[in-house]
Image (cartoon, rainbow, N blue to C red):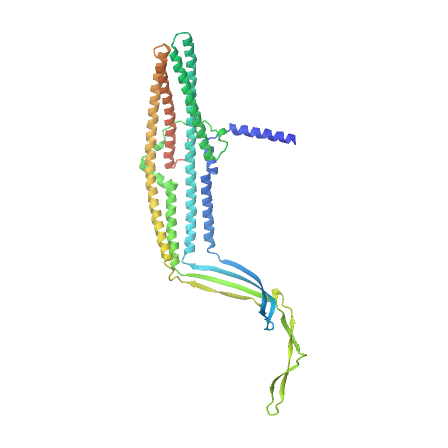
Length: 477
């Protein structure tokens, strides 16, 4: 038993170490989120609900079967169905039946309901795809944010390492009397500021990991990490397209427009379903029933010993009485329940037509409501077209601006690097004080951080624009 526990604990430790060593790629994050994200799972349930609604629509074409059975007791003064006399007794009855009905014609409502359910499934499929696309974009954004924060942490660590070496060098120079004590205090303040920026960068990295872990529904976010993929900035072919070309492509592929179009078709079917209530409906029906009672039955007759004859009249002239023999019924037990069911069975079948004449404007109002819903669906479809055009134009403009910002940040970094190297040379020969040197170094670090920020912003903006053009999200990784 102890040996099994030791093996289990060792296996658990190995599993935890493997979990900590795992580095998630962007593809793995997207695939995992699509399978486990709550919003995606909720949309998948909506698709299942639409499938159940289709089964309901199919069921409207099928007949309804219902079976019934009952057994009752009557206690008290009841008529004896054998003798016809009122008696205080307890009687029992059993009955059974089978009913069937089928809609032969219902104003084409069943047919339109089935067509509507098929459209609802299509709309739910588009909605699920839309949710998956949104989650993929959110995961990509969160993933790129982690990459940015990781590189920013590296920049802050490099800055801290450099200033710590400067602190050591300045301390030696102060001890040798070559630089004033104030330079040492300034460099110590710079090191303290670098530590603060490093802590802030590490906290931002932890929070970005938490955000992505929540999208993936991973609880152990502290041990969650991604692979440090090198995402290079590239000139996407999408920038060679015009905004109008991207818009036309988006209208062919974007799911939000297909969802609006499907909802418009559903609204049309709702009008047809509502109008079907104006037409007559024909129902075919059939019923079978039978019963059984638990009374004694008359099985024969025998002469009445107590009153063997009775007078039924007199002969004219002689006034002689005319007699007839009296008989008493011979009672026997009831027939078996199955025999009674067979003897008492009956059937009923036919057609029933219902013609709507007036129902308090209910049908008319339902049709009007359906028409209003259709007009609302049309407005939503038009709005989705306008939103799509605006989003594409915005994405195109943002991508172009992000590219220009990244190029400007590179130029700024190049200039700040040359300025810092020049300041470093002057500081080392004593021609620049430590305050001005720290200013040049801070400007360099800010330029490095800005390059990182604009780089990942440009990559994400490019991904969004490519997404509108129908290019898969994960292609260049």
